[in-house]
Length: 374
Image (tube, rainbow, N blue to C red; front, side, top):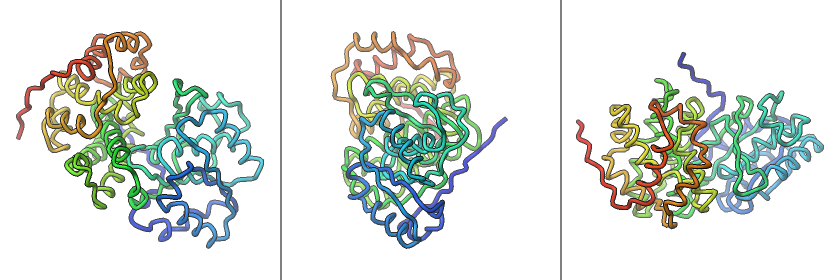
């Protein structure tokens, strides 16, 4: 039976933190979790400190999150928060930081061992407020959390309804300082979230609405993303699209694109958004064999045809790393796509996986028949 559960309070627009400070009143003391630069450069940290101080809320700052922060560090952070009587958590940053904040909130609220978090039966979590500084993560509107298991090649996710953020503040001003490469990569990742949700056996009329709108918003920004001239209006659209894609994925789960892209990131250090984007068009083409109308819906929402979408991704977030058939053979052997292949709607085999990898990453001459539709 189709259902839609989205308990996160979403607040958006310029200066939304200062315009809606009441949601920061979740206790007497909070922990701000962030990385070393983005929260300061974006201005988000200053705005949050101002609101906390105006409301008499004590805070501590943990600004050590990086792309290599692992479960041991996050666990230690959670224990420190419990010892210091932290009432709630504020995460400022991209997906890695927001996920770290969400996981630390669970450890702070539960006396468990590090890996017990993957049992997904913990009793509670501290409230988490998310302030994204990138437009791609989706973590700010989902119950999913991804952590590195103290090894850059080993990441594992868990989910719990207790991990939906209490509130998320979307202010596109905080994404204005993002380099164009990061802006492109995160936009492509958000596009993948929305497409994987729409082309999914778990999709419903409710998730479809937000997924298609996310695709449309990103498509409207495509020319400026390619040109490297992203406007303030584009930033607003991309941020809304990223959170909308997260809302869709929260109800459908991801599809094989993210599972397959994980191999590129771990083995070739291809950034997450580029890795997923490289496989997206081939996935859509494969899905078209099983449900042509929904595949066409995706392309229509983006505002182009399949070859044009491929050109956009090739120009906005190209995979330039050398990929060989030996690499593909290895990835097929250790495939993690099995865990989500039931979301495809067709019978997704290892040979299908191999062909998507090959056509996307090795067969540079791959051509698509232009789809005709009204």
